[in-house]
Structures are given as C-alpha cells and as structure tokens.
Image 1 (cartoon, rainbow, N blue to C red):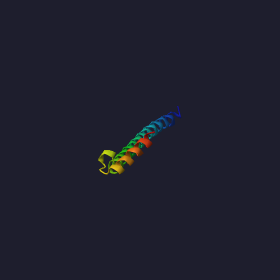
Image 2: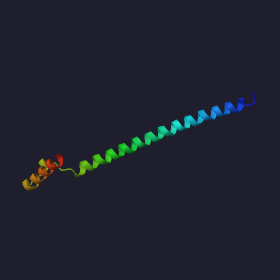
Image 3: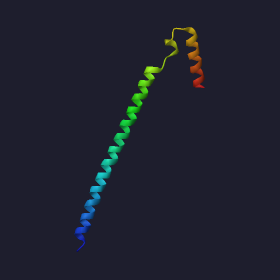
Length: 75
C-alpha cells in the first residue's frame, strides 16, 4: 500500500474542504437573511414615515382625493 497515505491525506483534505464549504454557505445564508431583515426594516420605516391614512387628514377635499387614490390603486 504505497498510496495509502496519499489516499488518507486526500480524504482528510476532502473532509476539511467540505466542512469549510458548509460553513461558508451557512455564513452566506446568514448574510442574506440579515440583508432581507434590514430591507424589511427600512421598508417598514419608510411606510411609517410617509403613508398618510385618509382619516388622518383634516381637509375634506384632500381626504376625498386620497380616498379616491386609494380606491384606484386597489383596483
């Protein structure tokens, strides 16, 4: 068995590579999840800052216009 040592070494290397790949892909998935969460948080913040509900508006003309816009955008 002159090649036994080489085979063992190769097997060990393969295992190490597989472990490394698994860790990298896990880190990649974690990163993607973090990015998605950040995007969702930003989206939520924007929605909180900029959306006005028609019932919050005092001016009747503006309120009616907003309601109509809402109705149109729902269709």
